[in-house]
Image 1 (cartoon, helix red, strand yellow):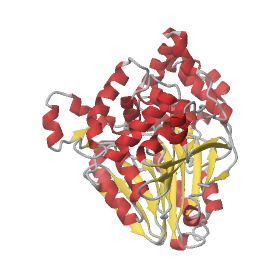
Image 2: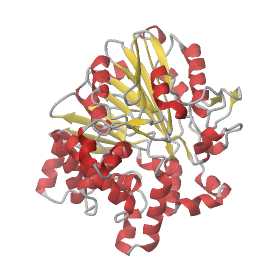
Image 3: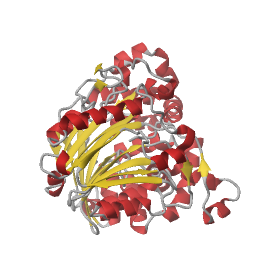
Length: 498
């Protein structure tokens, strides 16, 4: 996830004000997050019928949810079984009810709605109805849509301005300086792996204060398309944490690049990513889906692989992209825009080639790990690489913001102004690794909740060392820090569809 780092401070402040001023009924929304999570009780025959074929389980800190059926039913199961996580996700993504940020997000959601295929409209209606059936009646359909289109909102915000009708009918370029988060991912195949087939890994970098809800893994058996799995929060129809597998053997992950140009006539990224996971069998099909009417939002380096052994890196801007496809090789990704076309489109906000910069330092480290493990890469080597804490700039093992397993809370010597976002509590909050064989046999994955290295995050120590942080970010953010610290670290575990 590269998730939502731009708006965390504003949302957290709004939530803090809500907690301080709200009536007791509203304050109950911030009751301690339940671990292990428990599904609400189905109190009617209709609810029980809609939940048939679904389940929720807890596994080493992960909430594993299985959904099945037609779009509305899948959505209802999602919203009902993960109601608390969905509610927190809505608060975190778009703010508290009545806030200006939430109102704007809901207006954008109404503009996005016509761009969403009918089956996903039905699914999001189901999510909203499932939330209501679970007792969360204050969250509306538009809140659900806004929470799903968080990565697209800057793109479509221009349609709120005067002349929106004209903007909607003709391509428009919007250039802005976009902040980005971080992730560390790889994919390898052919001569790079132990069995010649793809191996993929990813760890999510996000603000730790809102990461505690990102521990949901959905397994979906849809009425159309392939069975697929994805990591996310409750209430999402796609993976904001950017991890997908499907039963045809398609593997898909990404790390975020700097947003630079938008086209508000394009299709939302949450729609295109979901369509790829549900309907695409091959790398070629997946590339076509991601490129089709691309709106430029949430620019990424997408890594993908398929059952033929083909892997690819697709650096996707708006009008520009860089695509490399192979059956023998390794791609390491760390938010570094190495593609000539995407770098040119990003212009001045493209990452510099400076070894002290977080993204480039990790890019260099992926090159070292490629050399070290080439020809031997399997799930075990993937777990080791995603947990790596070697700082390539300092030339030593030191868990900090420059390592594949980012742990910026430990301080990062030689940090440049470019990387000032690392000073906030953020970093690698999970890790996943899979192989083509694991995907084809039950959509299996190795997953770890918490820092991939197994290191603890000490919320008390962090808050004591930064006394102004809590005052600036509010009680909800502090709650998130402490909840994540209490949930983690957990050991690696194999999660599967069965």
